[in-house]
Amino acid sequence: MTPQQHQHQQLLATATTAVHTAAARVTRAAQTPTTSAELFAALGANDKAVSDILQPALTGALPGSRWTQDEHASGPMPDGDWWVVDPVGGNMNAVQGMSDWNIGVSLVRENRPVLAVLYAGAADETFTAIAGGGAFLNGAPLRASAKTDLALALTGTGQAKPNRDAANAERVGAAVAAMMQHALYVRASVPVGHQLSQVAAGRMDAHWQFENLRSHIAPVLLTQEAGATVTDLEGEPWQITSDAYLAAAPGVHAAALNVLRPLK
Image (cartoon, rainbow, N blue to C red; front, side, top):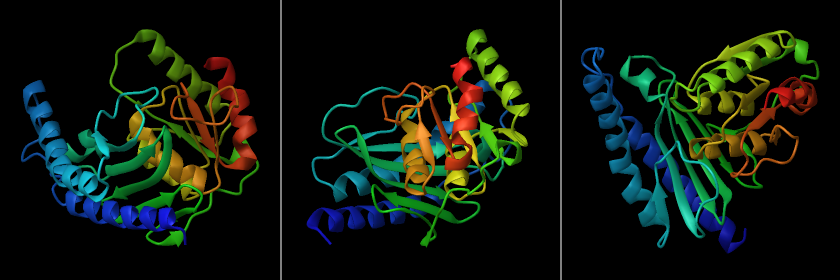
């Protein structure tokens, strides 16, 4: 093992321990929020509780590294080492008492993801990956689905970030309708990280987004390391600067891309 590989293993272990600790701080509101003030207070409390654990643990483990939890940001990142954190993916679900939420962490170095941890607290499932080293679920290797027929595929998408843009909503709806004509099933849900981790685990066969946000970096790396094919909607290899993407089992990627490409 090279010194760099050893460092990545140590950082992955630190990040994994930190997300497990932080997940215990995620709480459901005592009463389901019914006003904007109540809702955003509950969401903010969860984000802060998780970040207060993760930020010192992660930046302390890698001197000189920087931190961002702006999960809705996109585009290139400044040079250097960055911890990119989605404090509570699916925070709304957590606040409302649902189980589909997670904590996602990636280390990005010179605009390339180095490692990823995604912890689904309710299911006690820890997804991990180091670039070039494969993906794992609770320590067991992951492989993307072996399906080759889109007509048998479980596919999905979800709202990547809150907005009320009519054109965007129509495009997402059109893509769901188009995919429903070709795939066995289309799932529209959040968080995006949950669906991507299911693609990595071979439980889902494809996931697409018309946005490519910082919060997607960790789970996209998981899918890549599990052997999924990940491209933009022109079929070019995914990068953190891509404007959209499709992560799919290799055997159904081309067919799913043919459905989505005209709608990008």
